[in-house]
Image 1 (cartoon, helix red, strand yellow):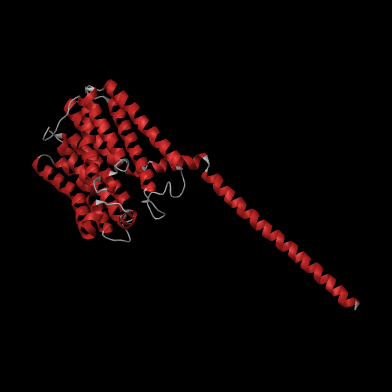
Image 2 (cartoon, rainbow, N blue to C red):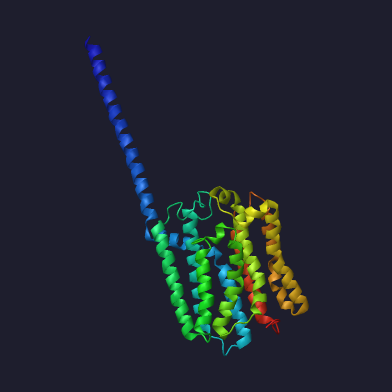
Length: 344
């Protein structure tokens, strides 16, 4: 009887120890999970992480779309005015102003895409979806960028030979368009975004940079803007084609949705390769230097091939933007090296 009692007591003590050990382990696991969550939250709220989120919201990979036509307009102005009359400070202010407005437009795009339910966990832009920034932070960022662009414009007006009203007409036309792309009536959501991109990231940007240097408008610059405008539109069209299903579910209408899958492939090929045909014609008629941008043609063929592959289209917009940058740089160099500029 005493043995049984002793055995029971030992068993109770063992169970108590095991229970205490189990409670300690459970408590330790809870503390570890809480510590991990706290660490993750602290990492997300760290100044470095917040700064990277702000930079990511600007979509720096897309900035070639505005930088290249701005540099092209400045290069054309350089050829018309010469080194002595070319204002380098004006060039810096022009680039600064255009980039600020472009970044502000990107921020506005992110905000309204999220509000309208276009962005999701599978989207390329997940700043608000992943809560890297709050809506208020994004709105503040957009307002700061627009304000910075306006300050740059004021500085440009003070040193540019162009009339203020002429520069203002082009500048505020571009600024309002960057907002109306997704804000206000939202041209992107009614299949008019493509037209807007063709105009803003082509003739308008080139004309603005040219006018800021020379003080007058030259319609011949529009011809030079066409190859870059088409290539820039290829960035947007590849993005819209990739997001066709998610855009359709969100209830918006893009050109890619309207024309369908097959026609979208044809249009992308047209936008991508027409600039190269233009450069070859210019080289045959005027100067061999116009063949410089054709160096990027093999990369264009690879991107177009991946565009037709549903499994590889995800990164096509960014790759098209990179191609746009290389093509634009070589195009600007070609315009600086040719003997005489046609149409000007």
